[in-house]
Image 1 (spheres, rainbow, N blue to C red):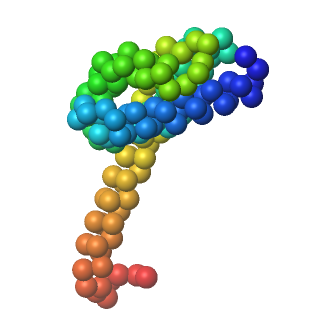
Image 2 (cartoon, rainbow, N blue to C red):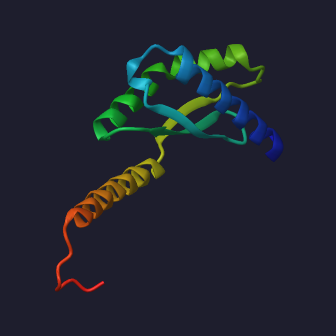
Length: 129
């Protein structure tokens, strides 16, 4: 496949997976999952799906297990909805950027909490501003 077709197929698969995972699957493990990026291989046989999962490591592991459990259903639905010669085999991986966002949120929360304690403290003569 040429580069434009790969991008179009990747985007179509991404949109359908967002719809399927977000609105049509009843598995509660998939509630914190959002599809961030899909890359279909040049031969169209494989699709690497990068998902963002909100929550701690346990929630992320359960969500990935839920995706692995439902990937045959997802592939079947993709075949039904998209007119592709080959429906790609789905490979799910967690987005590493989500961990970074969680760490940033924790640091901001800690900074806000520390800042609130500093504002409640009365300045004395030894404090230098």
